[in-house]
Length: 128
Image (cartoon, rainbow, N blue to C red; front, side, top):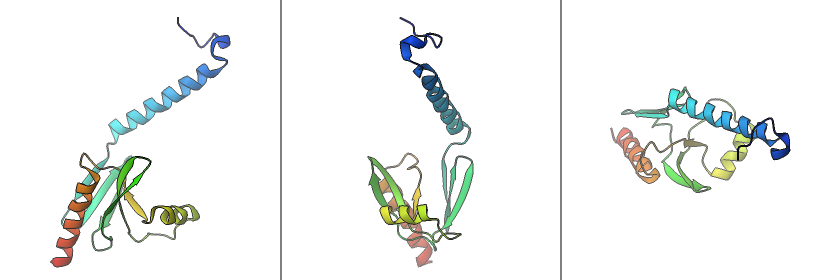
């Protein structure tokens, strides 16, 4: 049995909602293909590329890296000074998470392994 968008009695108008959700998913998938998440680790810093946006963090300004699990997703978290005064939302998020920054992906590594790799690079910067 096929349900068409013109048969409003079958879905009660939810057909358009389905189409909107499907289109949103397609747009997100396209964005991930066009702008994949990337992590570049240098000797004294690391750079994240997320949704076409680039952020560079120096290891000197970062705290130690740790992992945090929220809703089944484990992320690498750390403290880094804000470039501008944080908004009320960011202050609330900082209190809830305990750290003020998180790396948005683990880039194919377990979160603990990525945190250890970044901590090792951070220690190398301070020992040099």
